[in-house]
Length: 330
Image (cartoon, one colour):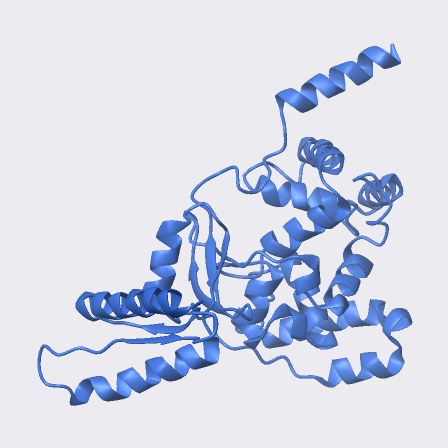
């Protein structure tokens, strides 16, 4: 009997696999500079901006806050925490409403991968449980966490902690403060109501709830300092550096979610400003382009070429320099 049940579950698992990232196209793409600074973000078919990241690309404070607040047993449960589910069901039965959720991070990832599937009903929860178990069979805990880090809704067209950190705070997720880490931890619970650029007071209150739960881990002094930090977020803006180069790289690698380039972001910005200041002084029908190449490695550090004709000339010059450098080498 048990063997038959297990065989049926394995067959069902193979017939109805979970929709892992990258299986549907087109997907969001990101072109980054050599230090990880976004140059240009290309949204997916739903117009979502997403910056794929690994656990090592995110502040340890954020990972610690996320696991402590959302799923303390994440690192050891098999995808489902039965005690949390029983507690949530009992509170629902007693109070007639949801008091605390029983979803694990694995179940939340299952919901993120199937956004159109029902999630509030009992049937929807059972589906999430099944999908979470499937994810745990196929992926490591680290891989499951990285899906959450890249796909968690962060308000508007932004998904993932890296995209949110860049959009709201203008910095990498590696550089998040304790206050910012707590804010981005709670933001996916109500991304439309807790957006820090639109509702800073609601975002602050939600952030403080996360900080209160982390006091035993981070200490009273750290929490007090984090609570004093004001919630200040910039409006969401699309990154736009080296746009023509980013478009070319995207066409060369259409199925890659993140494209790494050799561009130096600060140098690229300086070159673009320089060209923008010079262009108004040029005669009619005269254009400018710039290509900065590292003499030692022949890697492109800056690429600014508004018109096609200037772009072609700059590329030909770079190819000529590269060939000449190869000829003179011993």
